[in-house]
Length: 526
Ligand code: CA
Picture (tube, rainbow, N blue to C red):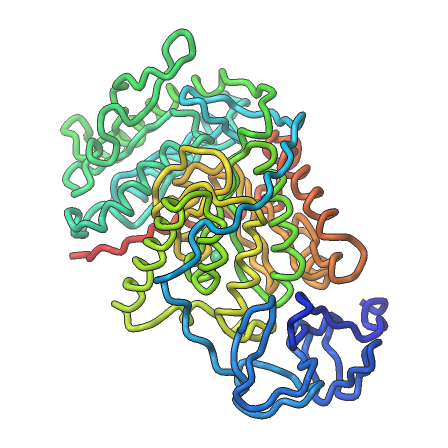
């Protein structure tokens, strides 16, 4: 700490056209601090907050990332602290007349020869972990399932050393909901597709109550679960769905239910235990990236490094998805222009329009996104936050769009439309079929998932030092001048291969820090 505090005053300007920059120094800087170019602070400015690089008159555009992030509400002389209370937010870009697939990014050279050790599934997907997941049709069965899972972990799991874990897919859906409402498809397909996540090896088992609205055959209709024939090819034949129904007449007493769950679990555990990791190309990675607890460094250090790694993944032929609709809404023109085809751009606009209407129904707009912590970290509004968030997508063409809860079926860079809520975004990316999750944070969050490894990237060295046993990568070294964006991007890429191979565990896995599955249910409850 002492070393960094004595560093000379330093600001970080993202683009030559920007008229504000952020203060890089730990602890911020006092009025009077003088930068190398002669700029003198006229206010105290906290770390990550903006300083005016030029005299701004009332009404002048405030530019960061070469984008107007706001307008000055009063005169702001050069050296002033530029924060959310002296800025007016711009309106969101119109969804009409956007540039459609206008940018043809030069094809990135293929990246060959990178592999990891994964579990090959019957449907061709590859798991990074070997987990028994117990699907539930309804929240009513959560307590019984959890009781059974504890017994399975204590009594059965030690007999199957190749199985990493047993996870109950607990959720709040299944009954008391308007299940025939059009938007109910979102939570239903989310649960269905999570059950089919590559880390569960196709071993789907379901615990049902019996009287719930979401009946097992509605959740997982015949033909949904791929099974391999003897040549290892996917036949999509109808495997009988394995359901333990608690209201079944055969169950007399609680222990009868627990015995049923454990008996069925043992069948699946035996099959999972027989699986072995094999060497597969890096193109089998399916990576979801998101951020949470962001600060002004997110868009300077961690997210650009993730963007560089995103490009590496695309070059390696992998699938990588970015999400968080309210955090890309203000940069929609950058995304539609990067779409690989007009259809992809139109799909992106459709998702934005749907979300605008969804927010409007609740009488808010995308500005409801930012948190007190974001603002304390220097992010004045959603426009500034979005510009820092969007860089996670790197520079490749966007080749596909998923609606919330849909499963990915192609390689390349995908926009998976989700709310920005960390838990909901993570849940929807699990449904999309990720086998690895990258999470950047500036304020700090101990986020983790039981289903898929989460690699956490700190935006600042101060956070990485204090949370040394929670953060997996320190991108703050970029702001310190100790590493480049490329260095950290490559470090992250190589760490992904090691974590996917099971050679390394993330801190969230080490401590078993797991957030709940949180479904996105835009439909009414009853
Ligand atoms: Ca988020």
